[in-house]
Image (cartoon, rainbow, N blue to C red; front, side, top):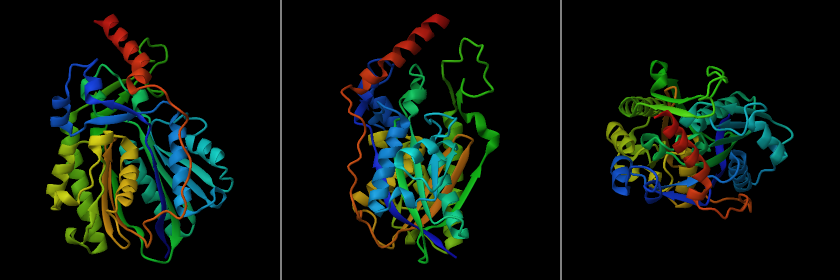
Length: 362
């Protein structure tokens, strides 16, 4: 049986930073309020298309693996904020990369999109159906934000990450995984006014709304991720003592702390960057994984535990055994289009539009 070694990794973070102090200029909030509840200090705001971020992350991952795009036989894109639904955004990325010899699939499972993609891609490699797969996870969530909603507006940011997985005879890559969904809680995280269930005749159709039941999400997230983590450890015959690093979905510092306690692992072995980027949904794990490698926190042969949850409520965990290499074979010069605006300047039209809408209905 083949395994699916991670041979390349890359991330893309938009340059515009939205701080807690910036949010306090138009929301009834403060740095202390946000930090004490979420651990988030700032987040990034995208100034271009989502696919621009995905392409930068993908090109950096391909360079790290020293892989030509024509060698790819599958692209899996985890995101809910794609450029378009038709054509699928994975095909846009395939065309821009010049990856002429692959299939391309969008995966919409919200924050679990990357982990679901890694699970699917790994199992397709194990069967022999594919050999070289690009797995991308990212989000342009600021574009779908109701900027009047303090409970959600302070949480999210934009980013994208990617990995290359390749068929290998070595027991490496994602060696155990468990995914699932608690669909009875599907409306605990819901973006409204998007999709065919919403009438285009409604005056509200162009105004994206949110349902977000924070306590329900917290409870389910900690429970499901911890159980999934224990499941994959059991599959591999390992314990938490064998784990070098936990790289979880970066939703909220309180959730990360609770997960560490439930799993029984020292917080020092949990990778955290939510304070820098907020919740970037499907982008959190591949960005965090890339940063962990860049910061020297992952060594060849290390066991890495990862877990995620998202709208649906989808959940999952994976156990990764890192391969022999922690340095890129090549570097990419891929960059986003230039930007001369601050995060507040990028968001200003949306903030003004939602504020006017709020006034009109009150």
